[in-house]
Image 1: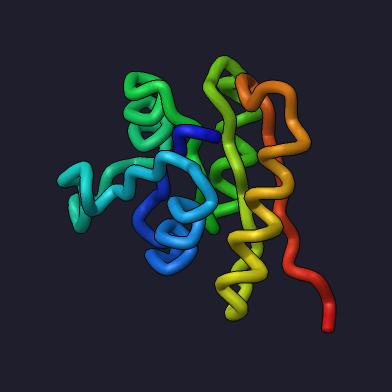
Image 2: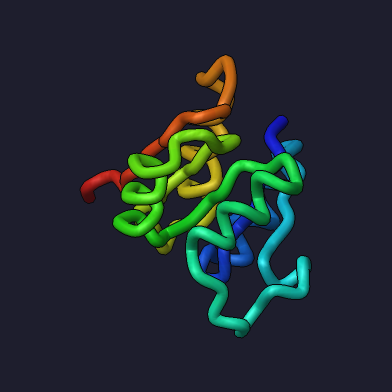
Length: 113
């Protein structure tokens, strides 16, 4: 089970599915941080303060953040997949393969056709 912080663009349906798989998912919306234009580094800081791993579709910016600030509780960057169940399943499997998410950058790539 992972404690996740889903950023503003992350699909709500995937967050819900990850909860059914046993993960503790807090969304930006639930945290009261939606539509505020919060910079990515502050999203990461919030996640760290709340002991959570960031999960996002914003791959480029969070990969850069990981490289410049590797002291975090994990960042999961995803390629969007319209098959939400498949997306949640791939994320769940990737999390379960890791001994710890701390300081890790995990890439979830949508499978090709």
